[in-house]
Image (cartoon, rainbow, N blue to C red; front, side):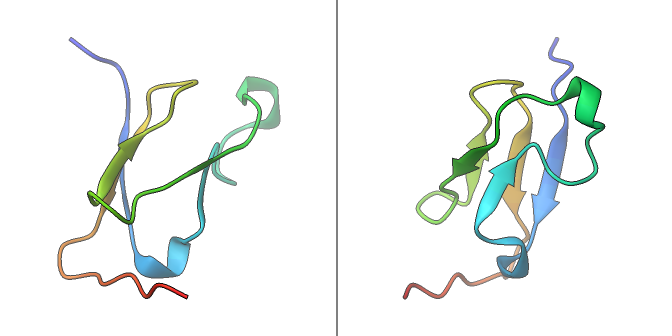
Length: 62
């Protein structure tokens, strides 16, 4: 059983990085940017937090 959180994000949250601003500074790891554009989901390699793109969200590529 995993203790990893799952966070739903929107296109406005991109570029996505972990930890997010809600994480206490003392418990954070180095910031890592995560690519969620291909599959709509990604997990942080440091803490295991899972991020999922909200249903119906579309990511505009530059």
